[in-house]
Length: 264
Image (cartoon, rainbow, N blue to C red):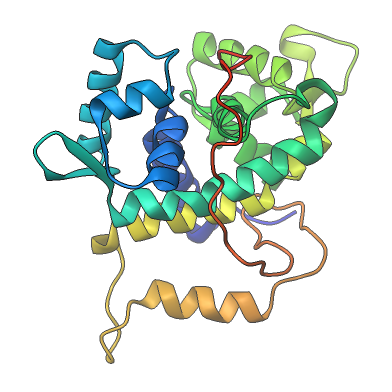
């Protein structure tokens, strides 16, 4: 059973940062809409996403500016920042994961809604630490899992219940409460490529956290290039293993302008 070294712990923090930036409702729809159509005025974004109110959309784009996902190249016009464009890599991984593991219940979802649904399952205080703890040490009994995740009792029980509802963990013992034992579902174990993309997104969104090497390139890019050559064809049970084979990255465009079918 692998130790919780500083590297996976750091990755946990990066994944948490990326989820916090990308998971607020309608962020994915807005990013993919502008990605598809180019710089857009607020009224045009509202026309493309008519189920979002005018005042709500104004708040969304302001929040996305603060998060460095959107920029205003001219008054009243919004475009993606480099960070916002890089989110398409995460969207692609999330969409692929969602199609593979949840397609039986959500086959009719538009791509943007599929991504938002996946992000909704990962957000929330304690979600990533709990999944990390189970990936590194699971199955774990109730008390040990709570200690590994560092959550207060009330927060822990709320998050455990939500993760079971979201099909990311399951109880392996017939007991509930303090006697319960939890493990990851196959869907949660399949999140490996998603974690890799989320961690890389957070690194690229916050380049100050990476130290430059003697040639001026950042150490993170050297590490990623090396890892890409040695990616395993079999997904590891560890939380932050690399994705199997590198695939071309393409935008995950909005594929349906129907009202989203699920609200998390």
